[in-house]
Image (cartoon, rainbow, N blue to C red; front, side, top):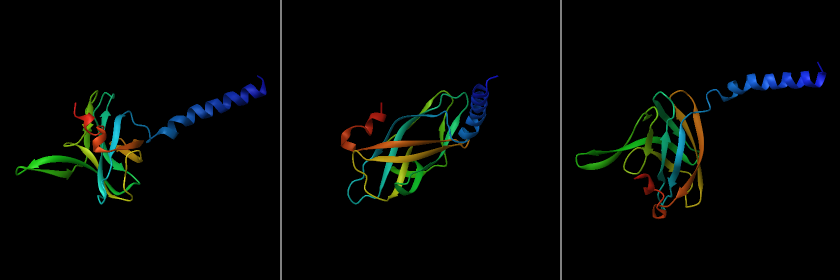
Length: 157
């Protein structure tokens, strides 16, 4: 066999054998649809991120953590009604049923960005890293929209 062809086939073999190892723990089958972060009004040091999480997998999955360099603390939250008042509470995970989707939206499940390092205005982008129950994660560069822009409430179909 010709030496360049042997070298090329060896390199291709090494690459193919290495690709799954490089992706282990990083790729997630979860699709992130219409992500958006709410802009922060002056003096407000927290905001929320919303999106649709679609799970094409044949088994249930869970979002277990979110992180962002834009905030000191990033938490998974929900809104509950308690004694006639709406209150936000942290949750340990967000379930995404097999073959289904879960909406993170105003008045429900969402991602809180607490202790913003700088105000977020329309047109900015926020990096989010979402971690799932199998150790995989997705990095998303999320646009910031104002409430008036109408993008925040579009998740309430």
